[in-house]
Each structure stands twice: as structure tokens, then as C-alpha cells.
Image (tube, rainbow, N blue to C red; front, side, top):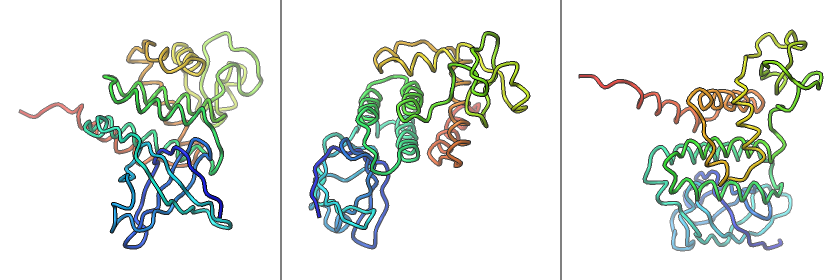
Length: 257
């Protein structure tokens, strides 16, 4: 077995037997890996981290041949993002980000840009008064950096530049022009401002994107399109997003008198 050390963000964790945990990590140097932490549930002092969701750690693991689960011998906490954990909305949004990262990234595919995106997004969310904006930026940048993004530069069907109002096709994965409208009768109109916002976020760094204004219509359409695109093309729904949507709906209900 070969031994490795790397920074790692916890994407998911689950009990293994009565004494141990299995955790999914997104690492700086090895991409997404699955690790076994033996004995952590009965002897937590063996590790200097509680291995909580979206915490940043430094791990040492043994790569085992013919196994998808690596043996984690050491896990040292670097940042637990406690200020996020004290805010239920931020916890929900960070959980959505981790679930998306888990779903989009293939196993053991290194991507330093996406690791830095995830860690910087969590750091910004700690002090940000609009954490929903961080989560939206993260979704758009994750799709762009992973090569999974919707096609917005031209018509996804014919490749022609779109000069008039366009529609967004979930099934085709991008914009379609007026000539190609018949190829997806379920395509929906999309604001030019929404397209411009996505393209701006794709091309700019986090700090610049945080200063980008989003009116309520564009913000709503962005979330609808991004969530629908992810659900359709990944062929799954996201538990954390459902919890967040339910929580936001409850908070928006009028109080009874």
C-alpha cells in the first residue's frame, strides 16, 4: 500500500459497523476519494478531527489496491467553519454545495481549481450576509470548471449566434435559436440578463462576482434553471436542495394571528 497526505473537504459521512466511519472526501491532490476511519466512533481521540460535513482537513491515507475505499490513518482538522454551522440557512446551502460536488465530480479525478473554488466559497460564506449568492456562484463555477456547463454562447443545436430572444432547452442542454425552436417544444424563454449573469460568473473570480448585482427576477430564474439542469442531466434529485427549498417555503409563509 502507498501512503499519501493531502488537504481534504468532507462531502459525506456514514457509519460503518459499530466503531468506524466511511467518509467521502474531495482532496486537493487526488480528487474525490472514499476513506475508512477505523475506530473513530468509539475512540474519537484517535483522530484530531470530528470529520464533520464540509470541514477542511489534512488527511493521511493508504491507497489500497483492488478497493474503492482507502484506509485513512490520520485526519487533522484545519477549519471547521463553525460560523456557518451556527446559521441554519448557511448550513443548508453548504450541504447543497457538498452534495453537488459529490454528484458532479468523478472518483479520483484531480481538479485543483474546483478544490480551491469549494474552499474559498466556504470561507466567503462564513462572513457573507448573502450566502445564497455564494451558493449560486459556486454552482455556476462548478459546472463551468467541470466541463458540465450549459451551452450559452450560441445555439446548442445549429451553432449559429443568437441575435433575438432565445429559449433554454433542458433536454438539449443550452440555448436554442428561433429556427431550432421546434426541436424542443418544452424549451422556455430566458432573460438576456440571466444569460449575461451566468457568462460573467463563469469568466470572473469569486471576489469580482460577489459585487455583481442580481435583480429578483434574474436570481429566481438562475436558481430554477440551474437546479432543473442539474436534476435533468444528472438524472437525480438532491436531498439537501429539497430540504433547503422546504425550509425557505416555510419561512416565507405568513404568520397566523
